Length: 447
Image (cartoon, rainbow, N blue to C red; front, side, top):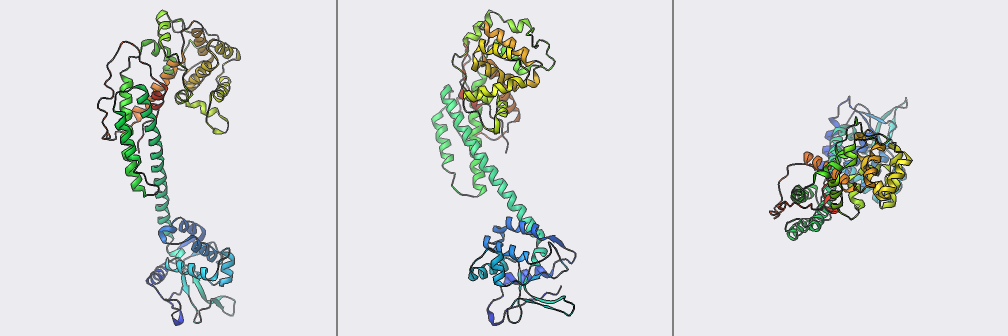
């Protein structure tokens, strides 16, 4: 392919170093190179900011490429198109001639096209006797072939940066949400720590977040927030560890935590392990010592997130009515008979029975017979030896253990929580509120 540096007579289109560089690149294109013009154009669109091209300029490039009849562009072929300004304007969805000329100049300056001007500045093609084009004057699109790999690398870099930017913004959002919830839980629970200073530290970090900034700026702020997140979480975990959890609570929640698929006591008839189902006077006393208030919906969903799978359209569960509807869907899917379900609702109450179903559904893969297990718990409820609190707490403890296993080892924030977790053990059971338990179910994070 013949190439040459051309200038327009009378200095109407002055030559620039950018144009010369583009023409040198075009001359260096391999004769064996082949590209899909629309694939390369997509890379150029993604990398347009790095290339310095505007949206309007790319609309014109799109139109120019459409004037070449082939989708595949070859390094050894003539890659010149010669549309008139009127034709370009029509294919570029219309724009004033002055705007067209300005954006054509942008394409040339960016090295995306090369002008091949005729002596009189017109665009045309000269054909030979056989109808073949001998000489064409117009716009050379050979840089599309010559710089295809460069455009691809630029586009990949831009896409990677966009993904990294999106991820750091997500980290910031999640971290801010979790810290606020954990601080609220710590204050509500009376966890010994200087929560006023913690809130001040949080506000100081959040106040640094600008409306627009580079990814690196957001990364630095996210690291500060995550350090504070780790410190607050450790304080709450330390507080929870100091609680003297009575043995019966573990026993009541044991089936949810550790039930095996081959358990023999769980049958639909309810002929289960008598020691487990029957309990004793100590069982009754311990159940009576549990919190009298109802479990909040939020903590139940935190402990039993699988219930969200049952919501039509993938939406959330916003109230107890929707939770009860989800339990009605879960019950038959586990093989719990209508009679077992009705008996549980009568003995426990509709809301407590639904929570029980949710807890069983959360660990159904570890329970041999959901119906038999529900009947066993129903029998306990009839004699006042059952509460949903231990079941839900057992699920939350399992999530807490999992999160500690998966947690990262980030450095502690410079927040004064030195007294957190140093709670003197007492013989009386300390209740854990919904806010604290909700805060402790978040999985450990690593970024």
